Amino acid sequence: EVQLVQSGAEVKKPGESLKISCKGSGYSFTSYWIGWVRQMPGKGLEYMGIIYPGDSDTRYSPSFRGQVTISADKSISTAYLQWSSLKASDTAMYYCARGMVTYYSGMDVWGQGTTVTVSS
Amino acid sequence: QSALTQPASVSGSPGQSITISCTGTSSDVGGYNYVSWYQQYPGKAPKLMIYDVSNRPSGVSNRFSGSKSGNTASLTISGLQAEDEADYYCSSYTSSSTWVFGGGTKLTVL
Image (cartoon, rainbow over all chains, first blue to last red; front, side, top):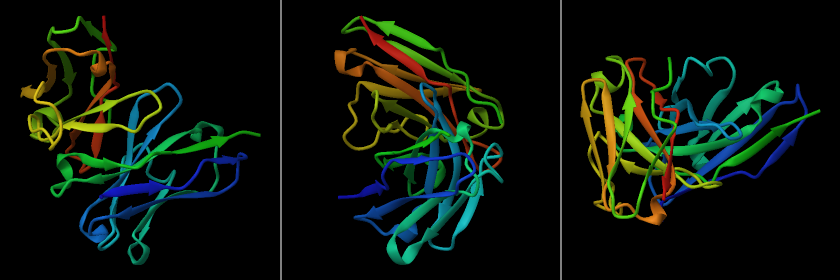
C-alpha cells in the first residue's frame, strides 16, 4: 500500500525550531515529488513547496520562500519541513502529499497531517 | 500569487447536480491543463478527485467530473448524495512552477 506517514503533533514556544517528517512507503520514494501544504485553523489549503527526493530539487511558493526549509533523506524515504524560529502564526495543520508521475497534474497520496501549535 | 477564486458555499438536494467554479488567470488555470480538485471532510486529509482538468483517479465515482473554459475550471457532482457534503478545493499548476489552491467551497447537501 502506498502511504505517507507523518510525525506526531507538536507544541512549541515562539522562537523555537522545529522539524516535522513525512515517511513514504509502498513506492519508489526517489521517483515522485513530495509537496507540503499548510491549513491554518478553519482556513483553506495553501501550497508551501515541493521537493524531488531523487536529487533534492526544491521549489518554494513565493509566500513561504525564506520562511521554511524543505529537505529529504532518500536513504530513509523521508521528507522534512523545518522552521528555525517559530511564530504564533505558524500554528496550523501541515500535510505532505505525493505529486503524481507528472507532478504538475496533482497530488494523489496524502499524509494524515501534523498539527503544530505555537504558543507562549 | 493570489489564490484561485471559488464560491464560499454551494448547496443542493439529493439527486440533483451542482457545479463549483474555480477562476484564475492566464498564468495558472488558463495557461495549463493541470487543474486538480480535492475533497476534504472535517478533520481529515484532502483526497484527490480530479486531475488534469477532467481525469478521475481510480476509485473516484463517475458522478464527479471536471471541465475548463478559459481561466475558469469547474467541478460538477451529479446525483448528489449525503456523503458528498464536504469542502472542495481546486488547484492549478502555475507559471512560477508551483501550485496555487482555491479558497475552498463548502458543499451542503440539503
